Image (cartoon, rainbow, N blue to C red; front, side, top):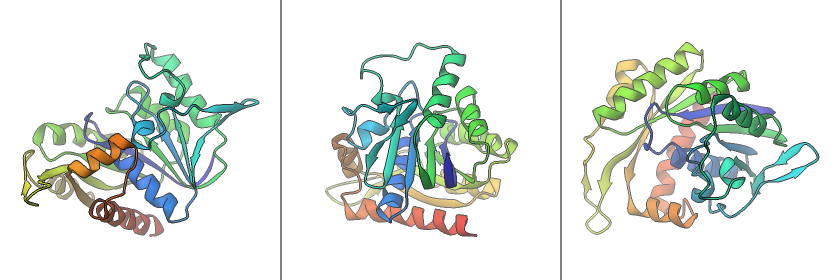
Length: 248
């Protein structure tokens, strides 16, 4: 695979919104004119197809190559576009590693400006295999929520990236307060500022915070993300920071 920038999105904790971050960043980069590849590496709970509104699409093959599904300049590959929606992945480690290798190496990605791998939670076999298969990763975006139970796991993600010599682009704090759609007031139901404090403690950049917003939820359920200007602006600011860091 030929890509100018290879990025991973990870967290030691499940359910923090890695796929939300991966999908929105990928779409914004593609809308800016970059050629982007997005690989959904979560074999057990692939959610990228749902978020992008392509859950009923199926990946096609040509000779010995997988053809990614294309949305403008964005190319998407996910196991969720291969298996039936209700089919569980009951595979042992070696079979999962082989599947990830095939999705990564046998896909006709073409020449990319950005390749983004949306990793499953944790620091075990699958995240490790993807980093090793990519050989060179230009940066890791680490996603957390503000509460201590999430931060505890995310610290391990920082150590994971550093132990593999993967540069950390920064931390994003997702679910950073609940924004009321009626009064506009924000309530910090998962505490406040945990991601930013963790960034300071570990010497990592803080890329920004995304609140719990019913509009983001509705857009993802409908497969029509980034339709709301307020939500779009939040993600665009994060993308600008990522671009700036990589240009350095």
